[in-house]
Length: 396
Ligand code: AMP
Ligand code: MG
Image 1 (cartoon, helix red, strand yellow):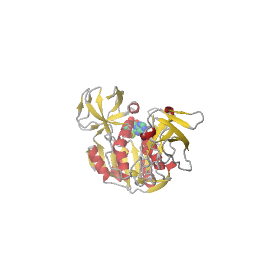
Image 2: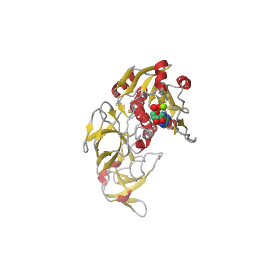
Image 3: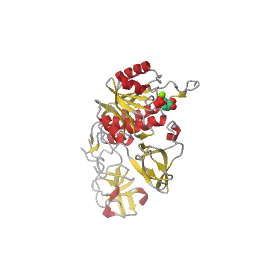
Image 4: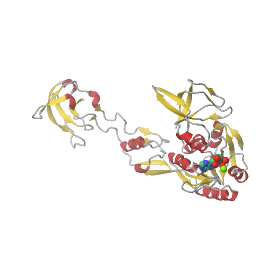
């Protein structure tokens, strides 16, 4: 076991343990938030034919401006391809096929049609740029989406555009989430003296779902070795990954650490990040396990910095996992001496400049501080950053 490792080292150790993943084919309707397991090539040219980007008239550029004879209409999905020549125009709808012979579009607002509908006066020069050329977006056979891409709505739209009714994705990992602590009650129950509502499992389940995986959330587990053992055994049998919350610090009642020391296998314990320095990583009966701290903010931050990259790695996605943007500080900030520091800040765009400030107190038990923030500082250990200085943040 390695003790109190850097963020980088923790990720390296995590990378040494991988699990087998599988693939599945889904209907596009089912694929939101899932992760592509192979490249996707277009089955068609996009667009499949030259078409108009405006309602108006298809014309020959050299005929405009001028009076032209209207010889027909091209509308969406018209069966026949129209042919036109010099001095002629074809009424055309957005997305409809360009007639053979036309090379430009004049928008309807810049025309006037004769009362009998036979002639059109084109009042300006027509625009060749308003013709969308066949294949200008994508060529047939082009790989427009690569393995490892998360299927957000516009990606799903593009897969449909490319002609695929189904998509091959990574099968979701089943992730058991076990909150531990005698003091934890489910929301909806009555709190007795010394009790609090259990919140971590809900946040962690959402974070798991965002990666296209399946959270298996159980009720809070009491601080008892035998109860914990039972819960871990059940989780190891029924999931690909276990996340426990709480019980990994130095205290006598930190039973996740204790049971993992005695009966599991720990690869690292404690990481140089703040908040969230107590986590452990190892295996329980062969199933990988992240023990994240109980403090609600820490549980989120540890998921983001350690669990998320590990899961993405299983899906073949290489880093960088932390995409940062530079912002200007509105106050002095100091990183912890030995820990990578992820303070919660609020970033606003004021007159074109991204400015960051702290809105609430930074206690790691204060989940509201995470809700009031929209970014985490990405401050290397020992950094002192002054008002007006630029630092990197991870946008949430
Ligand atoms: P622990 O890591 O078990 O020492 O817990 C640290 C702090 O986080 C304590 O104040 C706990 O009450 C709180 N905590 C632990 N687990 C949860 C949870 N699942 N939901 C909300 N708070 C928790
Ligand atoms: Mg506890």
